[in-house]
Length: 446
Image 1 (tube, rainbow, N blue to C red):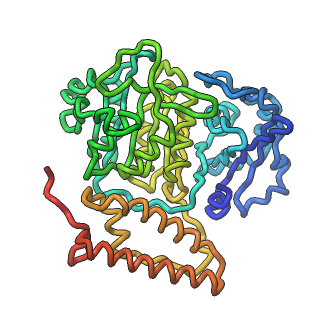
Image 2: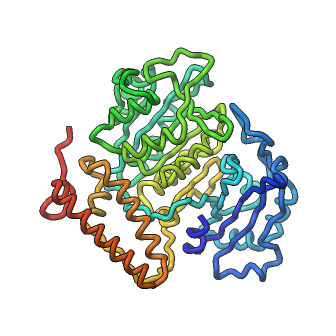
Image 3: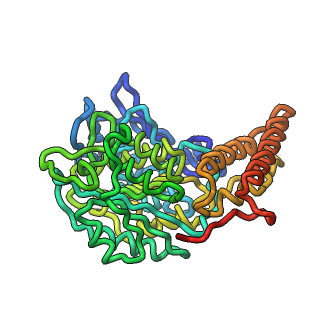
């Protein structure tokens, strides 16, 4: 996180936790061209007891509502007096980037965006990613998978208001995405009638229990997407907190929703695994109104960004609006793009390059672009499913080697990476994925 902040010249706020004193520390790090020692306010904020912020002494089970979080007066006074925050307010370019540490597992769960806005921070509040890989070019034909479930054990909501809100956001993209929908059997037909262009998958096509262990919803999604892929997985529903683990509440299966007492849950590692298998590099997590645990879904978005190594957006329907969601989707599928003007009700974790922010090159190394990169970014569903994760790893290596110093050892690594990319090009050519003119192989739509 800190490497991204430094190399892209971002204003960052580090939020960490010390277990020995059960306190939370804050430190403001300004871009290199701003001298923090010349500012009246100290770069290190007051040490605040975790309980004063609303963090629990022990890990809870079930719910931890957003309203319990608050910035205590000493921290508000530091923000008000520090010229660094005033500088941010006067230069609304890159926003304030949070480096939320994992010293306390629930720190990312707090609604920092709302808390800092209420304390007078008027720029977009964003979250630094924990990965270095630069984002690939926007897909030529975006594809989104919407996973919406309304378990009988949770407060019902209006599914059509949710779908309509998402459609408003998606239709503002330069290229409207192909929308895949995975939802309860009781909702599938009505959604298909209202959104005839969407691909609403058949809930009755659920794998039998004998097909293997695992979450029935995720098994259904993976089987339905065999031979196809999406770019973004969008979760809509209720959250749940089990100690430090955020859960996404689901019905028992796509065809069974009969338990009024207990929902079933999907956990970050399970969802991230499915995202990898269906090709999704990014996630959006929407908390419906009257949510059982809004903060859990905010934490879910943070964990998916970490597990998947890609962008993730949290969206609270009680606070956010379709325009903010549309801004978030542009960052995911039509970048570079500006962040939402108001980030209250959101938590956006994304690479600075998605916002059009460039870093000064520290070396003369310029990674070459071959057929492999073009195929990975083509958006063609016929591309082998191993290409996307390999391309992401190659991008990470390119970024690290671009930032490394000029030494014979680093140059040898760069040469080795370029040779590896040439071999990947050859593998695709031999498999028939790349045609004679270097383009991605295509197939007629079915």
